[in-house]
Image (tube, rainbow, N blue to C red; front, top):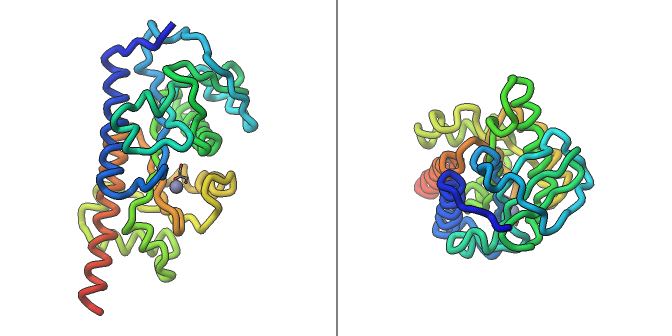
Amino acid sequence: MILKYNGPLQMQINDIAQVAEFMWQKGWAERNAGNITVNVTEFIGDENRNLPAITRIPLYHTVPELAGQYYYVTSAGSRMRDIARNPMDQGIITRVAAEGKSIDILADKDLPPTIELPSHLLMHQMFAQEAIQQGNPVSAGRRVVFHTHPTELIALSHIRELHSTKAITEALYEMHSEVKMCVPRGLAWVPYEMPGSMELAKASIKDLKNFRFMLWERHGVLGTGTNILEVFDAVDTLNKAAKIYLYVHLLRS
Ligand code: 2HA
Ligand code: ZN
């Protein structure tokens, strides 16, 4: 059996491809930088629900709340510019198996998922708990985990005076009035942890309830939300404010 690309699922995959293209064009995706996971359960359709597993991958951290949820996941080492060209050649559709102890790769190819998958699933688990608490289905909550390397925001993460959620948020709000409307809760500050580590995931989880976006010191941004294009737009707006910050400080120096 193969995945059937119904309209809604295809549109989700098209949006992911478009965002991957934007990331590359903006210079936020050098080499294999960045990764994306999107909960596509609402779009999978009856025709794909029972696809057999190509491969089963055990999870060290079980995610029982996510059992039966479907995700698009970028593959390990994939380049955003390649995902843009062919998102199903560099990414996979997965389903979390019963009890949340493993994930099944369903389509199209047997590719290893991003090494960030355990940390992304930890975040999706938090979104699921959030949705369940509010009496909503898991897939109706935040669906997107998006990680990228926006140059100017990373540059700002080197400035010591900006090393707090309050300081970085206020600096960006002051630079560009649009940011407050687009990211009303602000940008959470996360001190340096090794890329890809569970320490980084755990440090991020702490603020994920209250914040949708976070700045990882000397590394990049993590964005979450319901729609990947909106998540991208918010990161783009944050990075524009960071760019203005750098211009203003250049002009003043
Ligand atoms: O997946 O950006 O932080 C590549 C990365 C790791
Ligand atoms: Zn990264």
